[in-house]
Length: 168
Ligand SMILES: Nc1ncnc2c1ncn2[C@@H]1O[C@H](COP(=O)(O)OP(=O)(O)OP(=O)(O)O)[C@@H](O)[C@H]1O
Ligand SMILES: [Mg+2]
Image (cartoon, rainbow, N blue to C red; front, side):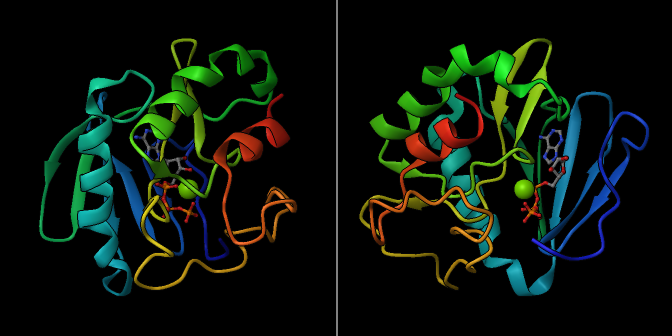
């Protein structure tokens, strides 16, 4: 997504301001994602998906919910050598498949490393298999503008292929 961004890195780990949300590290272990009013509908959806995935180890744990934010555990940082972690693919892709969740935004910004563990964050645009799209359709920039849309599957997003395109 475009928008003014303060990158959330080790040098500036407090705050990230994007198109959809402002993400603030409110404590060593806790991150708060606060939605812009126009994207508030995403809050319940992210909560829903994080709850389903809470028994697995490679996704954020939901810690709390407020009027316009969710709190989750800190999931680490973006790394340059992401390919080094490709062996952890099944820990991410299998839970998504088993629970019929399609993330639709697997990209280098949404994969973080926490103590050597590959973590998938940001369920902003995630859908269940039985849904066609999010209440506000995902913009083209999410679904393919960056070149990780599997061209072979028209209309059906494939997280597995998206993952392979960036990591494997
Ligand atoms: N649980 C977390 N642990 C560590 N960093 C996080 C966490 N959640 C979000 N971040 C940081 O904040 C950034 C934005 O979070 P997220 O991708 O969920 O928001 P977004 O508003 O949907 O962003 P975009 O639409 O641009 O992808 C992430 O790229 C990451 O740097
Ligand atoms: Mg993101």
